[in-house]
Every structure is written in structure tokens, then in C-alpha cells.
Image 1 (tube, helix red, strand yellow):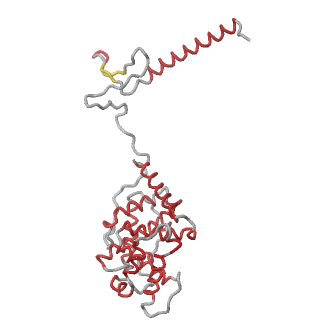
Image 2: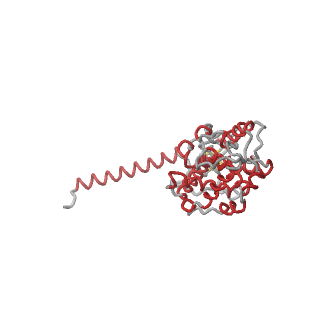
Image 3: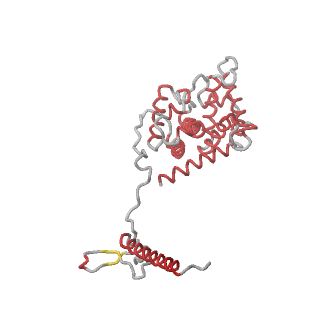
Length: 313
């Protein structure tokens, strides 16, 4: 049914009112929100700069300076969201630790990100703590090139653990890593293993065979084949019996201490990135009884790194 005359009049009046409201709103918006990049010189009587809107009411293209770059509407960028919370203080080192931190500076940065204050409690067992343990192992391994020792002296170990914490804390890591990851002196000393020097280790172990098994670890099949892990366990068994004692069972404190020594020796023969990949692969095989896919853990870690850098950039 066709609309009646009064109804048409109401519709027409509504359209006209709506057009008027839109026109008034556009004018008000133009007055209260000057277009960005449209800055023109006003007369001297106006006392400086003022925005100018053309009669059309549409936002004009920005004027370009002689250099070809538009004049910015916002003169500076806002600070990064994490800037007030990011600790970039100078670390207070003891000066008594013999570890070569310079050799693993990039690794320390990676560890700080993996153990960032906001992430560490949630990713402790999967990312942060395995990365921290790998860093300690590589630190001792790389330092053994100068010291000849695959373990820290107990009197120095506390200073080194404190220095590691200070360095990581200065780059944004959690201040509770030792407790969160259960880091003890046994993680960096010889523990109950009778072998703690490079010379003594290499006099007992077929070092070329051990290195061949772990030099290029298979990230897909290692958790099943355990090629590198079996070679490490075999070497740990051998050096654990150097003192003439009975062979220890797998998982005993003595075997665990000797296994740490084996990992440090391997870390001394590999460059830090390769050593990190080997150690993380082995630890990933042990996460959730070896049921968690290594590639999934790597993907999670990469996502953490990407999220972190997006926040601080």
C-alpha cells in the first residue's frame, strides 16, 4: 500500500533533520579535532599557528615539508609499555667468580627473556628452568677452556650463582630464579663425582665417540632413539667408577653429578648455540615423561620471545 501524504511529510522531515544533525556534528568535530599534519601559518595578528579546514569540510592531504616528510602531529612517541617495570640497572658482581660471562653474553640475554619476571612462574619447568640450567652448564664448560676444570670450587660457587642472578636480573629476569628452579651448589660443583678436570675426563672417556653422538643431535628422533642421552649416561657410568667404587645405579646422586660433568665437557667442545640446542633437546625429552613434542616447546619459546620484544619495542 502506497504511503499517505502525512506519512511522506514525516519521512521527509526526518531526513532533513538527520542531514542537519550530521552537518552540525561534522562542523563541531572539525572545530574540536583539527586535522593532523594540516598546519598553516596564520597572520601575525592571530599570534602563531592555527589549524585550517577548507570549505568542503573534508580532511585535506598533509602538506609535505621540503624534505618530503609530513610534519608530525604527535611530536614524540610514547614510552614502551614495560619501560617503568623493566629493570636495566647495572649488576653488582662479586668480582670473585671465575666464569667467563663474556663468552655467553647472547645466551644470558636469551635466558633473561625466557625467565622474564612476568613469564617465569608460568613457564618454569618448560622453558625458564631448563634454559637456566643449560646456561650454567655452558658457562662452566666454556670457562673450562681457561681453567681446565669442569666444576666450580664450592667456595667460589656461591659467588658465581649470585653473579648469574645479578646479570639476569639486570636484564629483566625474575629475582626468584634460584628458588623457582631449585638451583643448588650441586648444579655447578663436582658433587659426588670423582672426576672434575678436563684432563682426567679425557683420559677415561672416548671423547671422539661421545662428541660424535651429541654434536649433531636429531631434534625429531632423539627422544625415541636417545643416541646422545645413551652416550652421556655411558660416560657418566665410566667416570663414576674411577675411584674404584661399585658401579652406581642410574639416577643416583653420584651418577647425576657425573652426568653434569659430562654435559659440561660437551658444552666446552661445542659453540654456545649448539650446546644450548643439545641441552634443551635433552631436557625437552624429559618434560612430561618425554610426551611433549619438542617442536611445540620451541614454538612456545619463540612466541614468548616475540611477545616480549613486541612489548619492549
